[in-house]
Image 1 (tube, protein in one colour):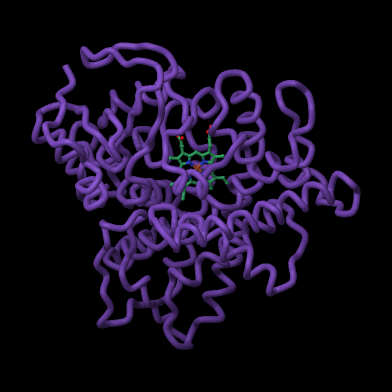
Image 2: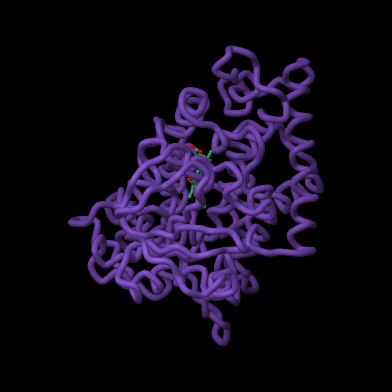
Length: 410
Ligand code: HEM
């Protein structure tokens, strides 16, 4: 049986404590799921390894109308891989996996290491920098180079990079800041669609074999070319989430600052140490608190019958901190992966890369974090005194308040 809360609506409690709400309520009820209302609509909230498996595997859920438009218009859009299911999903997803696996992930990491390494050289001996503000353009430049985007004039690059950052920063906000970010998203979509059209017309010739070249030629499972709008949305599906890795890099730097002993192994490029640290950053960082879906076909779980259209939220943060999956889950312990399984991290979804909605950018994300760790571990720097290193959990995605003010030694 899945218990139902007696309070009429949980919206305010959820917004006030998005990262802790589901787990705390589950703990109180002694259940891995409960039913309540969000914005007046019935929803089942669930957490834990078994819930993640049910949510991601077996095609039980889709993403149709599962997020408020304020969120989905910034993070996903009509016709994207996330809105597809079954064969058409598998077909499109295979395209992403070709780009992001088998070397594509490592290449993206290398380019970011180059960009960050060069930036650090510029910062050395200079005034402190706010890492949060600097990382977005560096990640954007790395992914633009990786994707094969033709070189942009500096002002246009700044505009595009700013738009990509704003999409993630504002996804959890409502009102004017969110509307502004959505308006900017339309600008980015027009730019990306224009690029696709220019390639198809032969006005722009992308680097052969580049992700941009591939996406401009992608076809649907009907064999027809993707519409320019859908191709643009998928191009943004590579660019936007790469820029979002800012959050993980920021939390990686924060973790590194208090673990000087880890530095030498990371600086030396110890692959096991880098992978463990990167995975632990992804597990611990408060990024997406939940992922939401709608039931596609009836199934039974926890003695409850789920019906088509039912709205369900999986607690991502709570599952990443579930003591049944992780020993001392609140402790940052990169060495835990010698005995614990990194595949249980659900920060980027769960299930199978091809068949399910698991993030195809997961290996690339690890490479990007590892690249940042290599640079930050081998360069002397310190956090500026007097800054607020507290994390605002009431904001989604959560943020280090100061943005991390760092001084790089000369
Ligand atoms: C900041 C790091 C990232 C986070 C937190 C993240 C998170 C996620 C999550 C939770 C999902 C599953 C969504 C769902 O179940 O509906 C997802 C899917 C996806 N991610 Fe990521 N991601 C990140 C980085 C990346 C990168 C670097 C790329 C590409 C370069 C990427 C591309 C995608 C795509 C295309 C999907 C849709 C997959 C599908 O529907 O089958 N992500 N991501």
